[in-house]
Structure formats: C-alpha cells, structure tokens
Amino acid sequence: MKAFLPLSLCGLLILVMTGFSCGDKNGNPEPDEETEIEEPSSWFAMGVDLSYVNQIEDHGGVYRVEGEAKDPFSILKSLGANAVRVRLWHNPQWVREVYGNPSKPLYSGFDDVLKTIRRAKELRMAVLLDFHYSDFWADPGRQEPPEAWENITSLDVLSDSVYNYTFAVLKKLDQLSLLPEMVQIGNETNCGLMMTGTKEGFPAPDACNGRWQNLGVIINSAIKAVRDVSANSSMKTEIALHVADPKNLEWWFSKAVTDGGIQDFDIIGFSYYPLWHTTIPSGSLLTLVKKMKTDYDKKVMVLETAYPWSISGADNYNNQFGSQKPLTGFPFTRQGQLDFMVMLTQEMISAGANGVFYWEPAWITSEMKDPWGKGSSWENAAFFDFQGNTLPVTRYLNWTYKMNP
Figure 1 (cartoon, helix red, strand yellow):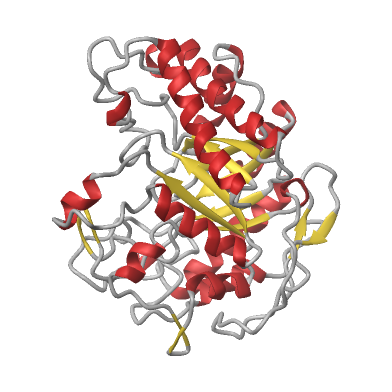
Figure 2 (cartoon, rainbow, N blue to C red; figure 1 turned 135 degrees about the vertical axis):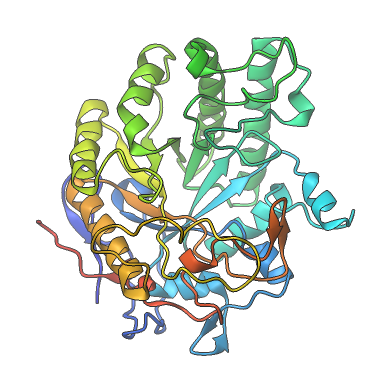
C-alpha cells in the first residue's frame, strides 16, 4: 500500500518518497529504490527515533525480518520511514560509570550521534537532531545543565556557551556533509532548560518560575547558531521547539512568543503518549493541532509517541507500559498497536500536521545498560517482537491514508 502524505502549508498531497515499497501482511519489507531526500517543507515525516540502536547492537541486539538478521535502519526505511530522530547529550561520562568501563563509547555523545546521522543519511533519510543541553536525560521534571557549564553565573556567558556549542556541533556536521534537516532546541522543555539541580547563582532559564526572558535569551541564542551555520550551507535546517503533553501547547507557545520573545522557529513539536497524557482526548487533539497551525503559522509535529503491543516482557527490566488501562478500541495487542498508530497518523494528516515520530521503536532487549536497568523497558512498545522480528505496527508507515478526510 502506498502512503499518500500531505504537503505542509500548501494543502497539496504528494508521495513522500517515490521508492516506497509495500510490506507483506506482517509488515515485512520488500526491496525499494534509492530516492532523494525531499526538503522538510514539502513532506510529512514518518519518523523513528533510533538513538539507542548503536548501543543495542554493541550489546547483542539483533534485528530480523522473518528470522534473517538485517540492518534496522534499512528495515525501517524500506517499510516507509523517511526521517530519523537522534538525541545529543553534551558529555555523558556517566555512561562509562554505568558499565564500569572507561573505554565504553559515550552513547548519545557527539561521536555516537555522528554515527547515527551517517547511517540515516546513507539511506537518504532525513535527520532530526535533538539537543538536550544536558549530560543526561532532559524531560519535564529534569533539566540539568551540563557539568561543564554548572559554575556559570552570568546569563550572557550561558547564552554564549549555548551558541558556541550549538554552532560547533552543527558546523562540524556540515563540514562532513551531514547537517541535519531539522534541529530540536531542547527536549520536552515544559518549564525550560537547565533549571534543575543548579548551583547557587546559575541563571536558570526557568519559565515555571517566571523566567521567560532568560529562557528566551537561551533559546534564541541556540536558534541563531542554527541559522548562522545554515546560512553558509546548502542545507537550510529547520528549527523545532518541543514540549511534553499536548495540554501544554497553547500555554507554552503563547508565553514563549510573547514573554520570551521566541519567534524564529519553524516547527511546533510535542510528545503525545496517550497512556500518560490523558487531558486532551484523541478527537480534541485534531482540533488543537489545527488551532496551533492557524494561530502561529508554523508546522506541527508529534515528536514522540508510542503504544504497547503486549503486557509481557523479554527481560527483568520493568516496562514503562502495560500496567495502564488500554485506550478504548486499542487493546495491548499487535493489532491494537497498529490500529492506534494508523489512527494517530491519520488524525495528524487530517489536522494538517507535518509528521509523527515514534520514540525508540528499535529499543529491543539486549545486554545494554542504563542507570535503571539492563535490557529494555520498552520492548513491549517496540516495532520488533521478542525475537527481533518486525511487527505488524510497521505497516502504518506505508498505510493508504485518506487524502481528503
């Protein structure tokens, strides 16, 4: 089945990639042809966050199609994925502490991210680079400044540090012909950036405590770095801002634009995990996305989502999904997972959105470690079963969506 996907602001419809192939009834890929990457302004992103893949493969994880081991980037691209999201931490030395091995790669550090970007670009997939501006996970409850910046007491110095770091990362990628199509300034910045676990005197951009002006200075500094690199590159990188839970969209972007003076961005991004984010029901989400597009004249993308296909697990790492009550009509089954992703993607297409990224669809069980366990807390929400074979959910990537619903 061919996935007809909408252009962003012009209301037309095109095929995102002319080489899409059909999958069989189990979602297994058939060969496709090499295609050029479309400009981000002209396509709907069928996105997958593959930040963990290098680490998983280094620790025994194997991805299969009908039992045959294959490259996961190639699998997902052949099934219809056209964009890869990857997170970047500033200096994640803690990874080596988790493994007790000083020679371990710094997963989600620059070199690891470079590898992921190269893998995606070699397959003609677009890239969304997610700057966390932290050495660790950044989310609504935790936004710690990098250790290298923790003693800063001047907003101007912090702003310069953010600019220089962002510029250096992107300039190096550009020199390698790997500049991302999209860059995300911060991850789930509901209350801001770098505002938890700070030392006395740190100029925290903490919007929830009224420091919208500080947040605006920092985000605008990062935006300027992206624009400055892009100005001298053939790649005109688009900029996304990202909050968790659609209930925060109207409040956050209104305050960011008016109180923070943040205006030079391209994409309104949000995380939508329906088992956690329950305030905005599915039908209302379509209306909200339409309103955000109208109010701000920006693109809108779901930058993170997921839904489980099982309540079971493949290891002793407790899963994050499975204890909740399933959404009505979407049981925690293989079919339920597929049906949810088709429904959400159709809803976003109908709303005029510009993409949906699934968070860590390749986080299968392996011997990899993080601070909370070994294996995966997400394998029952991945796109691969407990033997590493593709699941039916992958069919949503190349579904026949309604062009004029």
